[in-house]
Image 1: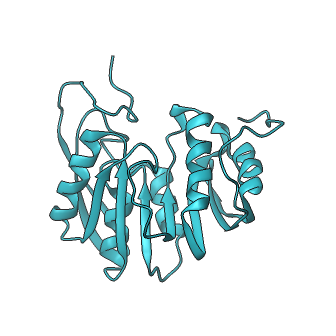
Image 2: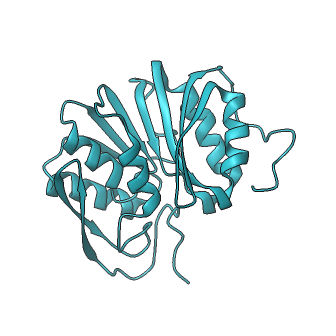
Length: 215
């Protein structure tokens, strides 16, 4: 049985591939493999999230759950003055992300981390970008949202993409307990892009009292 893409140490047989992607006029190439998310193409949700970002991105940026690095590399290439960190629990994905940083001549820090556990306390982030690992379950992704709220710099924002049928509305309801401003920036092809700002300082993850039926 193939490893889930959120497995820390995938054991599936290697099946390497190389895919192409373009962002803000920059042609990009990504090395991928079995045991990582969306190995044969940059998935539609990730592409929509990237294409919904503002015209200018600055500051300290985190690609949380980076996989092979599509988001972090794209941001680093389009806005080279950004200070980009990329993190994932999957050791194979992290190794690929490091290769893809070099392949695309991007500056970024890449590290293996279970959520925010291995990230240093500083810096805080001006922008956190995430295509969350839905199949890992709400207890995992909602904890990541709560931890992300605590790691934003003043004026920072968490941007994420989630499919409607995989719980977008219930995610919005939970995110509203963490952030003072939650905006659905884009809806397209069944995906919602969300921008979350003004953290309320929630100390830790807890399930919402009521869950919407879409979750």
